[in-house]
Length: 91
Image (cartoon, rainbow, N blue to C red; front, side, top):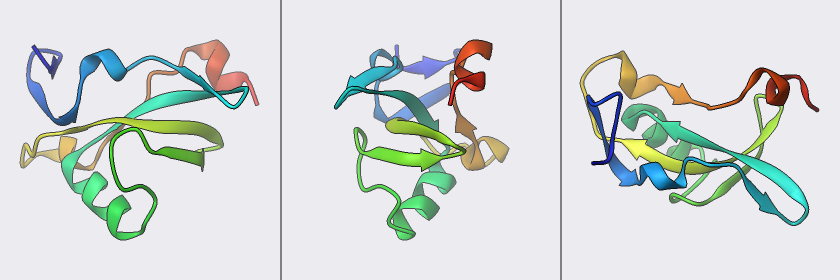
């Protein structure tokens, strides 16, 4: 079941993609985008599809792990970033 918290479904990507990845010797963290935020970021050419990297966003390296289905709520504008306290403090 590809839902987060049992309520929001993925339009793209899968829950299994929600793990940090090593790419080119660097750690990239997964980010899941709300539907409208993903649309906006695509229009700004920040990424094209799930799996694309965003090398500097909020001071970290991310890859797009998924996009939530449209909810017509504030969730559509969210960025879901699973960083631990240690990961947040690392450069």
